[in-house]
Figure (tube, rainbow, N blue to C red):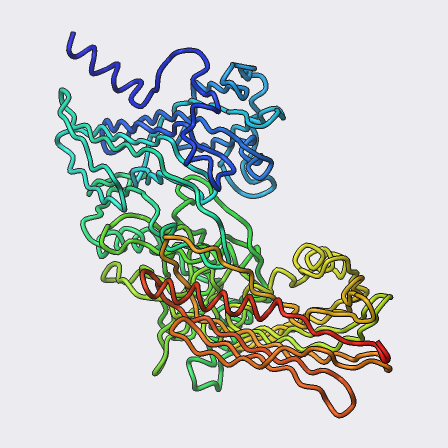
Length: 625
């Protein structure tokens, strides 16, 4: 009987009360509703490992959607491939009172290619829950069978800052003869472990994690979100054994997977020799070959069999002109090898402000770049973007730990930070009291701002206008024209230039009118107990000339500000020119760092001063008023 009770415990590990209306909105604790667009009622996973090749995973997930900002959760996706199969899918939707509205029939669960038109065996089960009156709850339960794996699934107890969590739990059932490793991050409850027959059972459960507001600064506590890494030392993936006893051994497995894939056709070998002939500097050779690689290739996702880890041969890319990050990086590696330049195929975790946990060995990577050591320097190459400047890594892969694959095994290294994160905005505006005020704005971007501006690259004028219509905090306005250009050299820059017509920019009031001279205003930052993290030092410089109609007198001009703080510096001056124009100059620097306690208080005070200054008006008086 005791064994039966334990088995039932495993099957419904984190289940709540099974009474009717278990997902009633009123049963959510009030603190979890604050700042939340949705509340996860339960999110659970049971991972049962049978051996190094086979495992099953049981998932159960229920989330209450509070408003339209979380309506994207109605679309639920379950991915699978030749190594993973999905079964026993159950999906339901509940109303505000937790009453069952509908069970989604299996015929309404779509099955399609995960990446349409590309080379992939990845497929996806799609559940599109019907639109309902807020708040409503969706529930999904399913099982995954795995026949080959390297990692155990990572578990994030909170997946987004705007989603609160009522209950989240994870359980790993591991054979006793297999060494299990784990690393906890910012958990309130540590592991609960027990033995069951021939397995060890490890369980974690967290409750009542609140949502947080998203501000200009990401709260530091969200970078400390509760999660769990788990793994085993030995694995067999697609018949190839390997170990995660060290970064060196994991890198060795990947290196051996790539061996023999760097052979280029003789015609291309001859082209490489011809292009680099007479060039003595390896850095310049690398630049020539990088530009060549970009000119003849394009990115295509390829996820076939072990191709999810193993690149296609360099000859394949040479002949067809396309490949994924693995294939294109291996191709660039092969070009450099012909030129006698050593480089390293490099594993990286991609995405803004992402990094791996170097104290826990596992495959935490999802992207490949190339490391090229040259004399007195190291060049880093992103090979999947045909417009990326030479030796420039954007926020996608900069400033994080990576794993270099060398003949001796894996070696940890660090990609460089993005430097010179500066944006210069220059503008000229004709202020009109009753009609539309008109102006031209030029924004020159460097570093992280350049990287961010690349969303405009290769976009039509209408597409860029749509971006600006969503982004500019200017009230009612139109953008008659816009251009975007890039300078794709080392330390690159971009320029966004647009014309602007703004209704109500100048507001008339009793013989006067006023306007806000700052067009890039800092928002007020509500004080919070959370620590804050600024990831990169950034500087924003504005220089704007305002042309005032004749027959006007200056009534109020804000005073100059020059503020220096640990968290940044702020300078603002407004001057009247000899020709009657008003010149507005502003420079704001925010310094990289973690701010808590008194440092956080100072940062809040600093931001408050900047926001107050940015919202100050210039007041103009009509003659005789």
